[in-house]
Image (tube, rainbow, N blue to C red; front, side, top):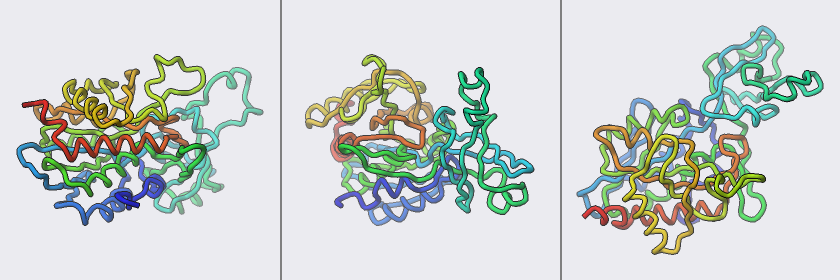
Length: 346
């Protein structure tokens, strides 16, 4: 398929929680190396690629993060149960009963909590906190469990990519393997300006990779490609949906960590309108992305956010619509291959 050698299913099915992005990075390197002018790996695992543009008076950075939300082993009980903490923001209400894989051996486990039949009336009215949950890996002793995993090992929800319905996809890790795939597609294009494609680490635990990347590149401006929370679910009023599936690329003016550059926002919106690309403006201020770290690095960097709407984000079953993903790519391609973001400065 044109421009899509590294498909979304392959990327989403890779296990790559925060701090353990190695397999994701290797897949991306294999895919993009023939199209990049340079490929560099930094000390904390960020992947920085460069593509020469038709002009060199500006440096543009496109960024997407490689990591996904996941789990870290913090203790193994004498009877082989695994106590854990989460990597990134996972709602405990979507955890119990889910399958996970842990460690380099990809050991299967079940996120476990007290069955409803054994709960008191008071317990049934509350969500089980994660410190009362554990992961069952089918072992009866610590010694048996330690043959497969150890303290500090990480894991994620079990890969489960599927197409369903009328153009929908559900999977773990769409946040932000979709962004990574978009950058892999973009690097095949001919940029207007010298462009860096940054695949960052540790976004889900505080945007830690993005800060280091920005110091190394020192871009004039950055475009951050993400998945973002769609609230178009039953019972949510329109003013609180944030964004909806099927309505196109999401433009963000503010989130929990960033007030985006107003001029870049306006130019991105104009580009979408002028080229008949479906888009929507996020109408709910929440969450955060690598934009916060990028914007605050050095003496400050101008940032614009471009996202795909995603239901049930940070769960085992994130849901997106393929048409929205294509709208994000089409808009990002125009921002890359034209002077749409620069001409407003002059």
